[in-house]
Length: 392
Ligand code: FEO
Image (cartoon, rainbow, N blue to C red; front, side, top):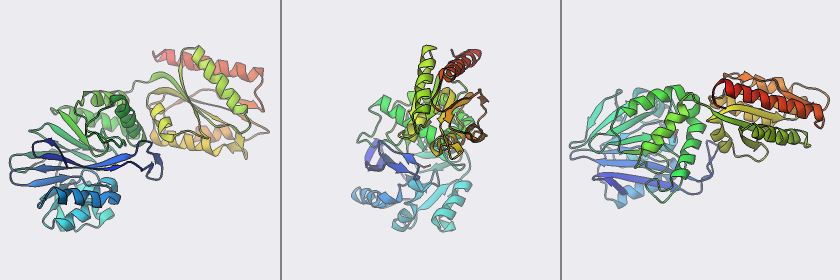
């Protein structure tokens, strides 16, 4: 346990080795699961637990620190990386009650089969006295799931935010000590799990913005002891503002699409547009998600395989559609040998994205002069569109 403020402690389980989350999300920097202990003059609360793979580490820390009494276990979020050790805590501390909102309670009943009598259900804005310290709870839906909530500790001005403002970043430092790395990791996390809900997150930001916050203590990654930069970063990510950037995510089998992608990249650069090119055969999905946060335009590149889109290009389209970035324009480039429905398949996967689809450029076989000319025209069209919205 490490002390943040008098009688407020962090209990972290660092997982240096974890490389994938939800069997989907790459974790290049590992992660941490952060629980917090708040000792009031009368009651003691544990805020979140840790992933079930780290239950022993949590129990070991509590034992080593001589914590003989826990009255409340505040559960901010039903997902098991934070809630999964609650049953072990309830077994170790038989008088402890789980404090959470009604939605999270329902999830914990479903996921962990906790005895219903062990719950105290709280409302948005409700307080819970620990004696000389008071916790206040705020619902912040969709900072990952619909039940997510945060806790504010008024005298110490700490916001315990769970996934909100968190990052998958294993570090021996309790606090952010490398702001660019922390920014990148937090942006990755936002892109991967929160971006689809940015309009609701905007409201959550306004809600927590009314609090006087000196420290943000998330349940993954380092603590923000200078929270201004992460609050400003979130404000930018959830805003409607897009940047003069094109995400070009492509895959190529026999070089035709790659030649087009490389030519198109240069055509965009010549026009002063930032290009973030991803070869989907080797790319890190998280890097692609980060690039989608701000870009005004996404262009998918695919050959035609078995009369349709390459599965890796279809996967990128599916992921983009699921993450619902604020992208304004989209297009497709690629190639075919004898026919197929590659373009229709890819654009058909973008149904949740409110994008203006610009005329695709598809070459028959290896690209010829007229195809390169069409790529120049697409680059010009993107520039014109970016100018229309005032970003170029
Ligand atoms: Fe870190 Fe949505 O759990």
